[in-house]
Length: 319
Length: 299
Image (cartoon, rainbow over all chains, first blue to last red; front, top):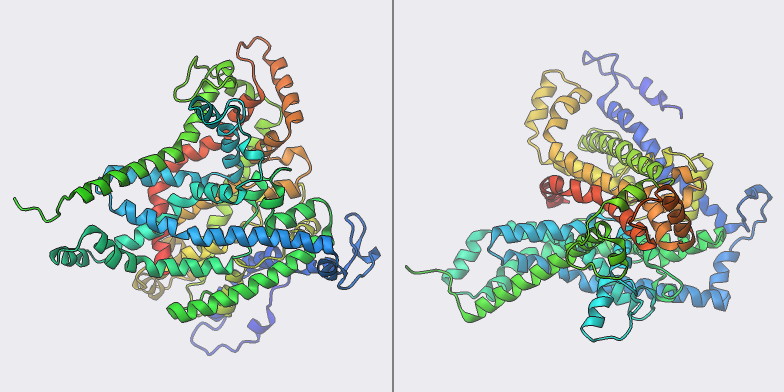
């Protein structure tokens, strides 16, 4: 790609003694330029692919030989009852998972508050170290662990349940549609609870210790101290993260659901992101692109909403 | 002696419950890894019958020896290590340099460019447009597909930028007065000062690279580009390929008394994929906890 040399060469040096050198503002821009090109190629160039949503495209046939169909794919979402049903089902899953995620986002807050109440330093350290490990393994590995622990014949969970007399035969926990939303949120928190609490632990460390001492002198109980000092101290952090999660309301990510999906649970596990992946894998390129586009539009709207909320709540915008 | 903190019955009960809850959750987090490990080193017969629950029995390491001989596993390990090392180096280098450049108010179009970068965290073109672009760029069945797209990671750039902004500006100013240019200041003053945050993003991007599998699923059709994660995913889903794999590995090791089962192969591959993280993690933990905190204070 050609460098934008013209404006720089024509720039009149003020004669400060550095006649030949570029002004700093362009020098900095030029240093960043290769990275900006990279950003453009991998984040912005793909947007040109939206054009595929307006064609009857099949992989293998060049776009120039493909009929232009206008808004056909968008209309098909609204007009084709089966497709509409599909999209509604997927939206229901998406909204359910995101809402569960937002409701349970108080878990890491509780985790941090309770952990900060533990006075044994080594115990606190061990808890913090070991509970953050699952955050660093992939969802495929989480699934592999689940596969082993919950397997029907020799998984420890089924063995224990049988030995304790709760069940007669092993249950195939991973191939069931019942309670799948709760199972998914449980795995999510297993993976990310310890890590999610780190920010709140930091916020608690940042609270002025004198407040606690003063409260103690006034005879405040443990719970009063938590309620009147710790909670207000970390609420700003909580709100920031809450606002950020609103911007990502329909982006559940795909990894977790991709790893855990199977023929039995597909109906309730297919969130919007996974749905796009699945129709893409089925080679329905134009429809997958159309759904992605709608998703992006909703995302941007939510982002602006979150942004203005952020301005109101903390006087600072996200973007 | 008079104690400030009163020990009431309620207080003791609270502490007891608190300690128990954390002990239980910590066990839940770590036991699956332990369970998997003791099953891979125990007799495969006992393991398949579900006898190995709390401690290993008839310890042997044949599972590891045999699984490592499986066709394609060494290659997959190479691909995983390659993308982790090269991808991490590129990401960390680019994040450090760009993060530094974005602290310079005098940069032309700085605000606009920075915003364009941040927006990409919330917004993407979608899977198919991305796939078609990658395909047009010749990045399917190509090692570069693993390392080029991750060079720019907006979150890392924010972390570096915030970290540098928290440093005393006088350090840079005095170097600038001595006539040092941007590159010189970056190399000899900024980089040594930001090592904690660089360690943080090193572990972040290394873990991301090691854990990625969706890109393999879409971009790579040739088996020689498969990563360990992707192989594991296939082993978990395709019983036929797994059966074939065991037959192969057992031909190779006909004299072995510990016969592989589909379960033992799966568990062993899982363990091989998870080992690097479990080993590296404790060394880096203090770095990234500190690093993320510093980066997040202003975030």
